[in-house]
Structures are given as structure tokens and as C-alpha cells.
Image 1: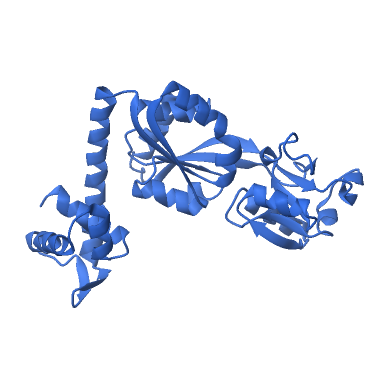
Image 2: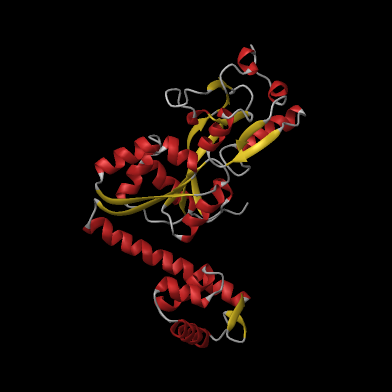
Length: 314
């Protein structure tokens, strides 16, 4: 048994049980991978995969247990490398952030600028996707941490930390009737076509919740994952927009008007998530603290430690 076999096993599963995909990703041959997996199965005395001819169609129950252990071993191996890199090259390396469009476009730019000035030798990568996609990227090791509003706390394999709260606002074209309202209400909003976020993005759950509690059905005319897209269609007169207040920049959005809506929708919390038992480089702690100053190295380390403790039975 060796690490290469465990990497082959993990990559086959990552590629949807396709040996060809694993071979392409790992720059090796399909016969070579098949041979190594067969040797691993013979050594363990079990079948890891269910096969139909030469094609893998499923993973067996003992195979699932082997995969879980293999992933832990590979994770710990990566942590060992990180320890070495930390002490050999403390100010260089790679940091990959997975996040949503709103965070990448409106919250992260000043943080990224400060970080790159402080760590010019660190290669920084930004991956954008839905909350589900970015969480999966961290769990698979394709990203070091992720930042989003929705869903992150639902993943057992992640340590999630609250960064900041924010509110939604309503945007309209100039001279829209809503601008004359003394007090904005959900009932008033429901009289107009609404353009807002797709369900999985940027606090959309809080918008749905508010209307549901009020017993009002909103006229959701268009949804998007991108605040800039929402603003574009509002500017065209296709409806009013409900979006994160941080997404409205008066000096840039001169053809729109913003109405505060904190009294209509509960505040949303942006969170940062890290894979459990991950070894974090020093510059990763610094990035987190730049983004959320209250998340100091001590606070993050304590959260990581607590997440690794077994639950106490009552």
C-alpha cells in the first residue's frame, strides 16, 4: 500500500468513477491506475469498486470506508507539506479563495489589495461559484477557504466562522413611484416585478422568509446570481431590485436609486469556512484577519481545535 494508490483511488471517485478522467488529471495512464487499484484491493482483501467489464459503476461499502481513511491520510500528508513550507518559505506559496460574485466584487477587493501588498510572493487565486460549489471546493482541497452568506454552516466537514452582518436594499430607476413612499412595506414591493438573487445566493432565504411570514406572494420576475446583472435589468425598467446593500455604489450606480430595507428583511451573515483539521499557513491566518478583524489567529485556532474534538455523549 502506498500514497500513490490512495491518490488514484481518491481521484477516480472525484472524477465520477472514471479512470480516464483520473488518468488525465494525474498525468498518467489508465492501465497504470487500474493495475495499482487492483494491487490495493488484493492487499486489503476486498473489492473497492463494483465493475461492469472494465468499467467502474459503483463503490462498494468497504470501498467507502477505505476511501474515507484514504482521504484523511492524504489530507494529513498535505498538512505535513504545509508545515515544511511554512518554515522554509513563510512569505510565499499559494492561497485559493472560493467565493460568490457579491463577495468577490464588493467585499474582497480592498482585502485582496492589502494582502497582495503584504505578501507579494504568494500566488492568490479567486474561484467564483454558488455557496454549494465553493463549499465542495474546500472539502475537496481545491480551495483553501470559502466565503459566502448561504449554506456554509450546513457542511459537517467545514469549520465556519461569522465575519459580518449586512442588510438588503431596494434599487429602482430614478423617479420610480416607490421613491415617494414614506415607509416602504412588503405589500408595496409586491405590487411591482422584482428582480433579485437566485435562491442559493446572497441572503435570498431571508427575502423569501420575510414575504412568507407576511403572507404575501412577491412577483419575482427575474433572478440572477450577479448583483451587477440585477442592477442592469432594473436600469432597463424591467422591475425593482432587491440586493445586498454593499452592492449599491452611489458614485457608480448613478442611473439608479437606493432605498434602505433593513426593516423589511432580517440581516444576513457572511461566513468564512475552512476544512476541518486543516493546517493553515501564517499568511492564511492574516488573510482571514484582514477580511474579518475579529477573527484573529487565536480565535481561528481555537475554533479549529474545538471542531476536531469528539462530541461528548450525554
